[in-house]
Structures are given as structure tokens and as C-alpha cells.
Amino acid sequence: MASDLESLLEMGFDKAKAELAVKKTTGLQGALEWLEINQDKSFDEIMATSAVEAEGDPNAEPAALKPGEEAQSLVCNECRKKFRSQAQAEFHASKTQHVDFAESTEEIAPLTETEKKARLEELRHKLAEKRAGMSEQDRIDKKRNEEIRRKSTKETQDVKEELKKKEQLKEVAAKRKEKQDEIDAKARIKAKIASDKEDRRLRAEKEKAQREGRGVLGVAQAVSASTTAGLAESRPASEYTEARLRLQTSTGNVQKTFPVATTLFEVAAVVTQETGTEVQSFTQNFPKKVFDAIDFGATLKELGLVPSASLIVK
Image: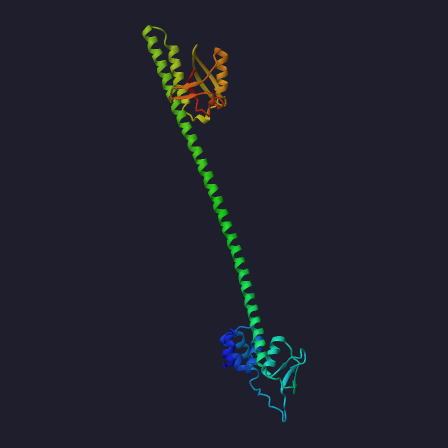
């Protein structure tokens, strides 16, 4: 037949608690009651309580039995529960805070095998309920921790997305500036080429006038004005408010000055009004480019025709 300790271990009780229960009580029933009373306490708490109770008054001595005392059990006057030993009554008092106990001559009969099995089954059921409760709490804690982790992950992802958007905006701004700088550089080159071309033309006219014996004062002034204009036109295209266009039409060359915000459609309208010819497109020789009806809605500044340009009208 299995011992009380082995029976408790088979039921799933902690070995340390089971050994202490067997040591402090008498019989399997007493051990089970002790374990039920202390089921919510850890082994360390039980040992600490026992140590405090054992210290007590250092000068106190155990109470001696009275002559002829024949108490068979103890009874709690508050809940009427009966106990076989004083140790069981003390455990009951520590668990329930009951303090009113009395001796009883009623002897508590030992549990029958059927009662023991019922008691064991009851304790097993309570133990299973306790473990299930712990498992449910673990599940709740795990779910809460997962929610915290997801929230933290989402906040981190939002910060990363915000930083990514800022970086993209910086890249767009940098590319826009680079493109504008390129447009300004091309405009300066075009202005310099146009200035040099005009300067060569005027110098050629001056030399021709000298060869023919004509006055060169007017030509010299034109050369000086062209040189001065060329130097002035070396500014960035973004600083100009007007564009000077040399338009080669079927009836001759036309020079016009327009605000930089003028659209190519408006320029075509002016040419049509003066020449009576419907404009289909404009062609630029350097750099080689054709502006057709698709480009007519753009301004002279957007098309890079500032500060000056030479266009062939078709």
C-alpha cells in the first residue's frame, strides 16, 4: 500500500509541500486539509511563517495537559468546523482569521476509503481549477504583451515612413534645383553665343563700311552697344523679366521683346497678326529643337528662350 507522501505526490502536489504536510499532520486526511489551507502560499512563505511562530516568546514553555484532560478534537465556534489536532486548528486560524476555538469530546472518525477518494478528487478538481486560472492569466498577459509589441512596432514604422517622406522631399527639391541650375547655365551659354554672333555681325558691317568708305561712327556705336548688352546678358535667366526674340518669317526677319511669362501661343498670334501667315511651329537651330502646338501653352521662360533666342517660323 502506498504511503501518505506517495499518495500526495501521485495527486500532483509539490514534493516539498507534501513532505511538510505529512510532517506537520497525522494521516492522509490531515495532510490534505493542511495542503488545502496553504494552497495559495509559496513554500518560502510557509517556512517563514513557521519560523516566526516557532520564535514566539523565548521564555515560554509548552502548555502542559491538565490532569484528566480527554479532549478528542477542537471546534471553531465561528464556523463550527472540527479539527483532529491543534496544528490543524492553527492552520485554519491563519487562513480564516478565526480566533474562537473550543475543545470537544467528540472524536473525529477517520475517513473511509470512499471518503478519502472523494476528498482526493475534490482536491484534484481545485488544483486543476487553480492551474486553469493561472493558464488563463498567462494567456491574458501574453495577449497584452503582444498588443504592446504591435503598438510599438507600428509607432516605429510610422516614424520610419515619416523620415522616408522627408528624404524623398529633399531629393525632389535637390533635383528641381539642379534642373533649374542647368536651365540657367544653358541660358547663359545661349546669351553669350547670341552676343558673340551679333558682335561678329556688327564688326563685319563695320569692316565693310570701312572698305566702302562709308562712315563708321554709327557702326562703332552699335558694336559698343552690342558688347555692353552681351556683358549684361551674362546674368542668370531667372533674373530677366523680358525675352528678346529674333523671328525669321517668310516675309523677313522680325525682332520682338516679350515678357518672360508670355506663352508661345501669344507669340504666334503676334506673328500671324503682322505677317498674315498661320504659325504651325517654331524651330530653334541651337540647340536644335522644334516647338509645335503641344509647346504653345508654355511660357518663354519655361521653354528656355530667356533672355534671347532666334526662331524660324513655319
